[in-house]
Image (cartoon, rainbow, N blue to C red; front, side, top):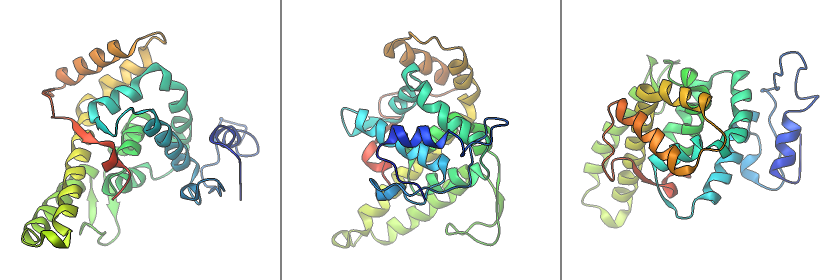
Length: 245
């Protein structure tokens, strides 16, 4: 069990001996962590922990809780974030079942973690997932995260309709919020299905002194080239919706 005093010390510890194998810079990805400052970090695997810490950093960085998905993608593509992303990228390289982790992030509405995982391990996220028996969304066999989200979205619509007359019960607004988050998760998955190669290429060739406005223009161009229409509101979401449901 491990207990450290700050995020920086924890990340440094995670990527140092004896928690690296010393042969291929492979961090041990099968050790969970006990972090005494934030109980939410307890029991997380290194990749989950790195994403959770970076998510907290991003949330504190936002000047307003009302953020767009486009703004989130641009923020993560900012050169200032390249060092932070290097750690989860390294951990993802040596981690198993990336697609299952991404599935849980998507279904739980943890969109910030989902986007970070799409940036550092897109190909692993987008592979089909095999379910052994039915999962909570009523799925079995092999399917993609996008298909899982579509099925859950339809299910939420049906449930929302059934509670339309029970506003005071609170169920209607709850299902409406979940449906909104599922829709945005589908959109983000689609962004990286269609523009993921272009975004990855941009990050690999990016200069360190690029300003934020230029990053916005560069990412917008790549999304337009991938067929996305960036009308105001198309990519809007509140970061409050990304804490979890």
